Image (cartoon, rainbow over all chains, first blue to last red; front, side, top):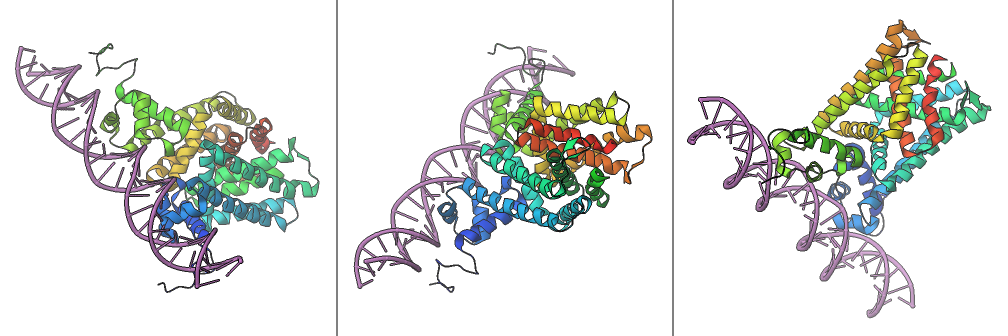
Length: 197
Length: 197
DNA sequence: TCGCAATTCGGTCGAACGTCCGATTAATGT
DNA sequence: ACATTAATCGGACGTTCGACCGAATTGCGA
C-alpha cells in the first residue's frame, strides 16, 4: 500500500529513470565523479539501488547518460549566447559573459565538464564523447563568429584554429577562476577579446 | 638473507621513501589518481603496503607529496623556457614550444596537472596547493614576459590579467590537443602569440 | 657487545564498493 | 479472467579499499 499514484507512470512529472538520471547529475556535479557511489545516487533519487542497474545496466552506462545531458546543455547554451549580436566583437563578448555568469551562478556545470574531461583522459569510453564535445563547441564558435562574417583568416591563423584557442582560453581561464575566487581574475576572460583589436 | 646491501641506506641510489614517491608519481601520471590504490603503488615500488603508511601517514599525505614534486617540476621547467630569449614574442614562443614538446613527448606531466587540478575542485586540501601553483606560474610568465620589459599594460589589459590568459590558453588548448590528437590542433597553441601582434 | 630506536614485514580489520539474484507487485494484452 | 511481461524491492555476493597492528629485523650509539 502506497500513498502515491501508480508506479509505472511518472511521479512528480518524471519517470523513474529520469529521477535517477537527475540525481546522478546532481551528485556528480556537486561532489565529482570519483567520490560518487551508486548508493549515493540511489539515495538522492529516492530509489532502491538495484533500480540503477535495471535502467542503466552499470555505472559506466549511467555516467555516459549524464555526459550526454551535459553535452546537450552546453551545445544549446553556447549557441544561444552567440546567436543575437552581429559583430564578432559583440559575439565573443556575449560568449564571455555567458561563461562568466555560469562560473558565478552555476559553477557546477563547469565542474561537470572539467571532471568528465579528466575522466576522458584515462578512459577511452569517455574520451570519444568529450573529444566530440570540444570539436562541436569550437565548431559553433567558428560558425557564429567567423563564418557568418566571411572571416577566413585573422592575422595568419585560420578560423578553426582561433576557435579552438577561444574555447581553450575560456576553459583554462575558467578553471583558474574556479580555484582562486579572485574578482580580478575573471577580467582575464574579457581579455580574450584582444583577438579582434 | 637478501642479495642486496643494507636496507636502511639507499638502494639503487634512492631511499625507501623516494622509491615510494616515484612509484606514486608514475602510477598517478599514467592511470589517474582516481583509479590508483595504495597497493598498486606499493607493488610498483617493490615495497610492502604498510611502508606507505609508515612514511606518508595516509593516502592523502602521499598524494600531497606527489603534488609537491609536480609543482617544483613545473616551476623549474616553465621558468627555464622563459629565461633565454629577450623579446616578448620570442619568450612566449619559447613557452609555447616547451608546452608543445611536453604534450608530445611527456604528456604524463600535463595529465598529472589536469588530474590534480580536478581533485582540487572538490578537495580543499588540494585546492590551496593548485591555486598557488597557477598563481606562481602566471607570476613567472608576468615577470619574464612583461615586467622585464617594463610593459605594464597592453591594449588596456594589465600584465597580470594577460599572464593569466596566456596560462589559461595553454592549459585549455593543451587538454584539447590531448583529447584529440590532431596535428593541426597544436597550431592553436601558436596562435596565442597573437597578443603581441 | 648490549640495548634502544628505526625500519620492515605479513597479515587482518571493518567498511564500502558494483553487481547480481529471487521474490513480490503492478501493468498489459487477450 | 488469466497469463505474460515489466517494474520494484530487499538483500546478499565477492572483491577491493585504506588503515592499522604486533612481531621480527636492522642500524646505531653507548
